[in-house]
Length: 153
Image (cartoon, rainbow, N blue to C red; front, side, top):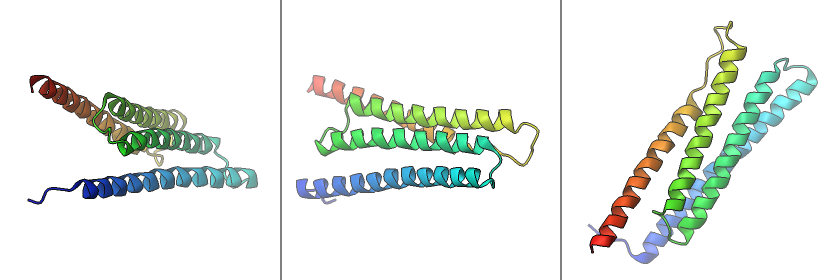
C-alpha cells in the first residue's frame, strides 16, 4: 500500500474542502432561491399558504448556520487541526441546528396540516441532524482515544 506524501495529503485535503464548500454554498443558495420564489408567488397571489414561507425560512436559516459552521471547520482543517475538540463542537452544533430545523419543520407541518392527509413531514433535516450528532460523538471518542495514546507514549 502506497503511503501518501505530504503534498498528496495536502492536495487531497484541499479537494475535500473545496467539495464541501461548493456543497454548502450551493445548498444555501438553493434554499435562498426557493424562499425568493415562494415570496414572489406570495406577492403574485399564487401562493396562499404563508406556512410555506415559514418552512422555507427555516430551511434557509439551517443551511446558512450549517454553512457558516462548516466554514469554521474548513478553516481549522486548513491549518492541519482536524481531530480537535473545537471541530467536534462545531460538528455537534451543525447536527443540533439540522435536528432543530427538522423538529421545527415537522412541528409546523403536523400542527398546521393535521387534517390534510396529502401533507407529509420531511424527515431529511431530522435524520441528517441525528446522524451528525452520532458522528460528533464518534469524533469525541476518537479524540479521547488519541489523547490517551499520546499520554501512554
